Each structure stands twice: as structure tokens, then as C-alpha cells.
Length: 60
Image (cartoon, one colour):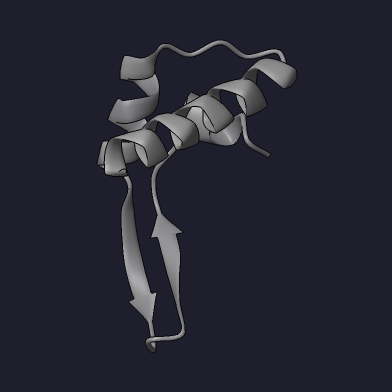
């Protein structure tokens, strides 16, 4: 079940980027996600704390 969910999320990310005219390989997307850090804000939500990345800025 986890593998299916991971594959689904990857495909959704890939399609979202393709719709915006970007193409990133699986390795580029995974590398960006692995390098991201998040911080817990008073146990209410998580906030992403990442540096500049072409693939992440593509989601804007």
C-alpha cells in the first residue's frame, strides 16, 4: 500500500510540473524532497524550510 501511495504522489507531482511546462526526472524530484527540512510549529502544523530549488519553485 505504501509503494502505491508513493507512486501516486510521484505521478501527481510529475503531472503538475508537466502542466506548468517543466520536466524533471524522478531523481531530481526525489533529491529535492530528500533535501527538504520541515519544522514543527507548536504542534499545529509543519513548515517547510528549504533553500532554492528549481523543482520546488516550479510549484508556485
